[in-house]
Structures are given as C-alpha cells and as structure tokens.
Length: 517
Image (cartoon, one colour):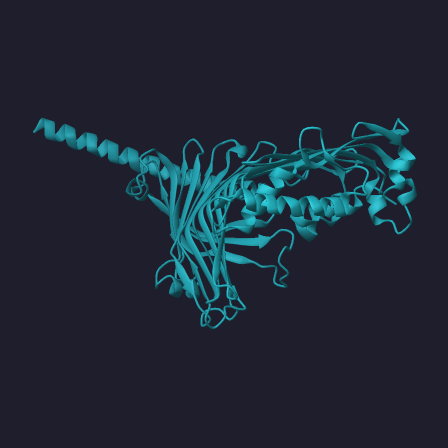
C-alpha cells in the first residue's frame, strides 16, 4: 500500500512538473515567436537574391500543451526577374496551425525526434488554402511538413510534397497533347545559433515535361544543397542529377540526348560578382537518325569536366577568370576518337559582355560603376591537347593587349595601331598530320572500330593539300618541325622589341604585322 502511494506521488509530481514545464515553454514561445520567425526569414532572404520570404501569424490561442495560431507564408520577387504586374506573390501557406509545447511533444516523438524540443509545429496545406493543388494532389495536402525548435535554438523545417500531373485542361499554357508531371519534393532547412549555419537540402525524384509527343524533357534523382558562408553574400551549392533526357523530332529526323550522373558544385558571391563552379557529366550520349540514310549516329562523351571561375576586378571593374574542360573519351559510332583538354585564363574582359548573361537585367548598375577606362586584356591558353592513337596535338598562346574593347567596338580604323597596343603575343602550334588524319579517318568511318592504313593515308593526303593551299602563303606556319610533317608555328612578339621571332627566324615587327593587313 505504501509503495503504491509513493508511486502515485512520484507520477503526480512528474505530471505536475511536465505541465509546469509545458506552460513555461508556452510562455517562451509567446515571447520569442515573432523574433524567431523574423530571424529565420532574414537568414533565408540574405542568402539569395531571387525572392523574399515573409512569415506572419495572428489569432494566437495559448493552451497548456499547445498554442493555436493562424500562419501565413508568402514569397515575393526581389528584383522582378519575371515580369508580372502583381509582383508574383506566391502564397505557400495561409491556414490555422498548432504549435505543440515541449519538452517532449507527442507529435515530435511520432516523427522520430526524441531530443527535447521547445516547440513543434506540424502543418499541411488544406483545400481551403489552395483548392487547385488539393485536387491535383489527389484530394489531399500538396505540401505537408513540420518544424522543430530545440532549447539550444536549433531549428529544423522539413517539407514534403505530393506528385502532380498537369494537362491542357489544368493549365492553358500546356499544349493539347502536352503533359507536365512533377514528382515528390523533400526539402529540409536547418539553422544553428550562428546565422551562417543555415543550410537547405532538397530532392526531387522526377520531372517529365511533354511539350508534344515529339519534344520531351525528363530527369530523375535531383539532389541539391545550399549553404551561405559567414560573409552572408556567398552561397555554397552542390547539385546532382542522376539522369536527364531530351527528345526532339523535326522534319523526319530525331535527336535523343541523354545525360548520366551530372554534378555541379561551387559557390556564388552575388555582391562581389564571383562565380566558382566545378561540373562533371559521367556520360553524355547524343543519338540522331536522319531519314535520308536511315542510319543511326551515336556520339558518346565520357567523363566530361567543366571547371570555371569568374570575378569582378575591383581595380578596373573588368572580369578575370579561368576555364578548364576535359573529356576522357569521345566515342563516335564504334570509333574512339581520343581524349582532350583545354585550359585557359583571362583578365580584363568587359564586365557587361560577361556578367549580363549570368545576372540578367537587374545588374544594370554594373554599367555605372566607373567611367569607361582603358585596361589591359590578357587571354592565355595554357594548353589545348588532343590525343589519339597517332599522337598529340598541342596548342598554347598568350595575348596581352591594351584596351581590346576599344579596338573591337570602335568604328575607326584601328588596325594601323594594333601592333602598338600589343604588349605580348606568343603562339605555339604542334599539329602533326598523322594525328589529324587519324581523327578524320575515324570520323568518316563510324561503322567500324578500327581504320585501315589506306584510309588514314587517303585522308592525310587531302589534309596536306588543303594546308598547302590555305596556309602555304602565311609566313607564321611551317609544315615540318624537323621530326615530322604537320602544321607548326612558334611566334614571340613583345612590346619592348622591334623584332619578332617566328619559327626560329627573326623579322621586323612592321613586316610581321603588314602581312596581316
């Protein structure tokens, strides 16, 4: 009897303790809800330049174990990227919601969260909020999810969507025989105390867009993550797509393009205009069928890499950057054409010509940074290489020229002083005829996996004849480097010398440039 009384007393004490803790948690939520929502929205808004997130609530009713409120979540454009008179306000949620008090809300425990929670919110878009999405999702919430805030200020928001399928009857912009099918999204936001710890992860299982039966785009397995750095203006990203397919049929011919395992990661600083990206495609296949021959042509690129960097130079507001691309192999039909790479750097390119394409119309302020001023432009091809069974083609050059933009954009006759504007020009070309002949012989015989000596020699004769015809009168090229036949060039021009080195010989700079007028 005494043990029973003691047990009942302990349970009662724990129950009253939990009720007291829950009531205290409710008071904390009431006191800090506005601040927490504002901080979260501010972090999301400061980490990107596309939209503004707004979160508001009203009609709060606080109870012992939960607080009822009306929650509204909207997105609006920041810079009017899409022209829309109504400001393109998107209502994500506008309905009642229940905030469960900690420390151990049953809703949180049901979702597998066993750590103490200050607050736990579950939500789902109702038919009242968006009747159209409710119907398209199969008469159930299109978006559902939960948000949890721990006592250590760790915030997590998880969203999930249902798959939907749209046809012309649902959306006028879709053609009569078109279909738009969007798979299931899963999105997670996480935030620690530090504002820079905000991260977003998202995945989409599939997307199918049938413009018409002859034009189809689809992809599977999209995974993305975004994380702002401490400076709040740089966002790190990582994007992966398992497969992407495009199909097009026009005038009796079809083209199929398949991408497998696409990855892209890097960072963007939208304040200082810096971009760094490393992309890779494990396999890219292009298949075409021409009705005239009824022959299928396949081109396959394996491990295609594209790395690029660009940034705005604060001294002259020109663009500096680099580009590296390579491919492990190109298979044309049954022929392995070889592998290659290109590595180049550039400095001093016109900001308007490059960044306009990346930042669109809302970066018009780039034109007003400073008055136009002359600056040096340097383009360096560190190395272009193509390798096949016959050997290698290698090309590199350096061009350092003063005020290139004036030369390109001026209507005046600037050719007369181009040589005075060049600080450095160096070019080296090594292109053996054997390597070029191997490539073109393989290209002309995709139905076979090998080429014969006769096929290579036939192509080689044509290449040698064309080289002599079109380049024989150009003094910067020679057709033998002392070891093998091909197209070769070795040039060095510097501003501080009146002489030019061309293939081991010296000529005057005046004579050299007169040859190109």
